Image (tube, rainbow, N blue to C red):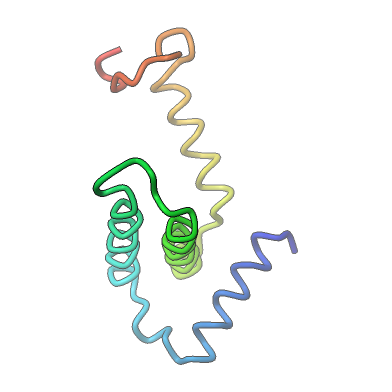
Length: 107
């Protein structure tokens, strides 16, 4: 078992001990990801000097819900990220996208 699998197991056990799985539908988890991502963004709401401790806490919340959703949907986070990287590599070839923030359909 790799470190990510161990972490996912810890998160799963944490929620099971509290009987929270009943609330963790895919839709609820997706909503929670969005809510926590907004809280992460709020760290930079008025300036670019975010409190590192607040950023760490909110990022952990986002990641926690992402891991719960992956587990709920029986998806391997490593596998799906690598799959998406392959898709993005085709959409954003280095020779066209290096140093640019242009969307793929505008390259």
